[in-house]
Amino acid sequence: MCWAFKPDKILTTDGFRDLISTNKAQIVNLSVFDPFPGLPMPVMNRPQVTAALLVVFAVVCVLPASAQVTADRTTALSDYHGYFPCMDCHGDQETIATPRVLEEEHYEPMEWEDDDGVVHYVPFGEMVSIKDLLGQEGVDPSPADNLARIGRRLNIESYMTRNDLSPADSVWTLVHGGGNLWCLDCHDTADRDKLVMQSGELLTFNESQFLCGSCHGPILRDWTSGIHGKTTGYWDPALGEEDQTVRMLCVECHDSHRPAFRSEIPQPAPVLRIDGPGDKPVHLEKAAHIEESAH
Amino acid sequence: MSKKMNFVPDLLPKPAPKARAKEGEVGRRSFIKLLSALTAGAIAMPDKAEAFNLDEFLQKHFHQMTDEEKQKTMARLEGEYNKKYSRDDFSVADGGPQHGVKYGYALNLSKCIGCRKCTHACVDENNQHRGSEERGDQIEYIRVLEMEKGSLDVEKSVHDYTHEVPAEGKYYMPVQCHQCNDAPCVKACPVEATWQEPDGIVVVDYNWCIGCRYCAAACPYWARKFNWVAPRIPDEEVNPDTHYLGNRPRYKGVMEKCTFCITRVRKGLNPACHDICPTGSRKFGNLLDKESVVRRIIDQKRIFILKEEVGTDPSFYYFFD
Image 1 (spheres, each protein chain N blue to C red):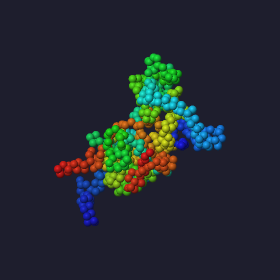
Image 2: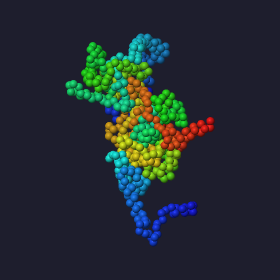
Image 3: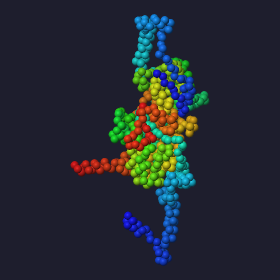
Image 4: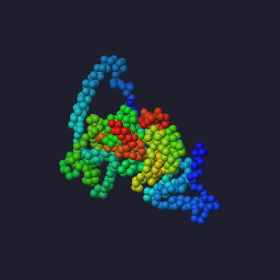
């Protein structure tokens, strides 16, 4: 089943409208499926022939391939479930990927100047948490070119000073997908600053809602129409400036690696004031007094 | 009845007969002069914010004031508040409703985690009484009820929980003024100090309220709160951006309530509780606009109205998804 994006006039996320117009959901028509288009139809109409052809096809093509995929997948999950080698460098995700609305001090885009006087800027969602490169010889990142590029660009030293990262705390657990996901299901192997859809299409981190929506379709549908998700600013965006109404992206409220909202201590409870300005309901005190005197 | 009323003239000060007026006694004219002087003195007393104010005493009902009188009243109130809170930036707006707008609120019970951030953002925005330190009787417009999953029985809900939220097996239902279209509080008021504006907000004229609390008794949502004491708001915490019918500082002995942050929504902004919500459970918009988010929720989601059976026709909807 395919559902269509419904363009929304109050969306303000950069590039979102363009993406809607360019990435329309592709409808695959599966109702007319002829696996052997070259053969004459009378032959194909015989069920024995069809069954025999399917068996041959399965034995020759499908089973070995699926067995291989299953083996790879099993290896990957058994090795990495609960601990991910990616986190040896990209650890401390809790520090860097904490959703901005859950914290008192919101996570803001980073901007700083390196030793050469070049100003660096990392918008929300860039994969910036890389450690163990500083002062550690013999690191063999893979793919080497990519990681070295990111390391140079981020100026690890200044970054680590700013965020007070501790290289020792590298163990990190992915709590998303019930153990069926791992890093490269969402992150591209070659370009660490890109996300990858199941179709192979690359997305920037600011377009992560499409990746989330590939599993959580109804939520993306609701988010698109404004029902799901947090919006701040104007109830009628036309009354404010263009950037004053903000629609939060998925990862601004949910930690993509641990999406469930964490439990927290609530704000102070109200004082019950049923009978008047006292701090306790007066009638309850009276009732207790009457009960005591009755005994 | 007329016989019972006969005692009234006896209690009034009898004017001294002209013939008996002697030098040194207080005659009627001099008594009136003295009274005027005392009144002027009371108005001029600089340090007593609660002193009798003739302009305030003679102030008309909000609906009866002309534009000029409204301007004068707002200017007077701004002066009073600036002096009281040692500021110079108070503004008291009296802006009216927009044409073609009726506010509606929708709250997603599946998403609310019961953190009470809305409650306290509301207190900050709306200049509510912060409570005395020993009692902590802060006035709050929003109560967050902790409910059993699978139950809608508010009688068994808890609203003073302090444990971590969200708790296992519970869901959370914030309750505030529902801005009813058939509001029992409005019908109960004996002096028409409260009414529903054309954009759906039920407001209170704090200068007209006599503090009888009939409206609080009539409200099925416990949405009206009474100022038992003179509200205490620290100078640095007061919000100077106010509206006459909304969050301007209140007096002792008057009723107050949620107005969907009238000072914000009439400028086009969302209410404070809406913007603070960390889960995006709260949705606000124009019920007359088919494209507004509240209308989409009503169209697409399973909504329900709290205490629908009492027939108050609220503008506040809950929904699950």
